[in-house]
Length: 185
Image (cartoon, rainbow, N blue to C red; front, side, top):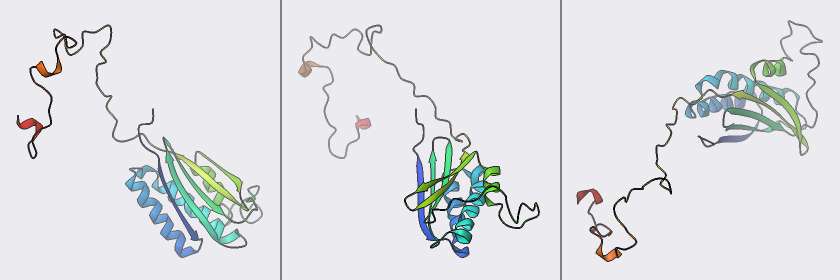
């Protein structure tokens, strides 16, 4: 049973440094609105890393699309660009130097996410990662209801409605007069 509707947000942009900060703030605002505050730090860092990779590496242009989707208990953030080359994840940074100042973006994504990946899309690619969403802060109470059937007496016990014509019922059903509440009887 789906207890909450899915949530989705997308934006198309040029992956320029000034835009990356704006998108990071917008993603954070959406997660706050969706009551997913616990995911803001990881989601913001992840989207920053993916957009920075587009800015540094994508060819022929820096156009990309960011998608944020929450479905049940999984938040997926993806960035689609027009460069068909997949990122090289074999050695981070400058030749595997552990003190490198760049080239660690996908290692960071791997460390902070539940799962991540790259897949081709049209003439480019999509790089994505998922985060486990915390349980909803407002638990839905089960609906209490009774189902009347062959094994229960039902709400009309003692009244044989099939033999009483509708016009002779004690309180006939009718619409309330204009401006009058049903409870005002």
